[in-house]
Image 1 (spheres, rainbow, N blue to C red):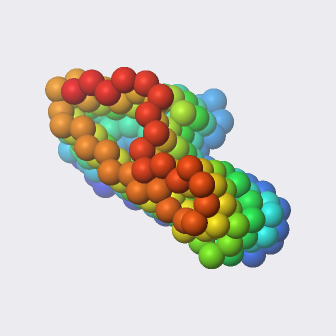
Image 2: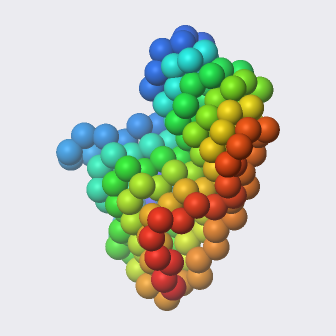
Length: 193
């Protein structure tokens, strides 16, 4: 969209015990969600599922640079993991397995809540970024809260490198639940502003 808002919302209402009940899943070699000009980009997703299935992610992408604002627009990604009351793993709020490099000058905001609350879910991070995230001068803000469950390693935020090209970078991670090793922020890479 040129100068227009792009808003994507996905809610998974499944109550099944199978895996991969995501709200928004950006995948496929040619997949792209993008704005140009002044347009903002908002993506919101809520995972579904129950039981032992796991990988019930709010918003996830697996294609490099599949989300982008090439002008001055801002990007907001907000995800809530599913599997409420379940025992699955990897119920991330927001999850990216490939890099994002935002080519415009706008900001990038991610907000994630790990799923599996009230159950025994583990490794259900608020925000899980397995590859580098970069902007071109725009601020980066990441806020994540791990699953409020009895399992372990429910991190708030886990990320690879972050590079803003001069903009501010803010990370707020809150580990949650009653298990072990519920770290607020786990960093595997450098942070550069």
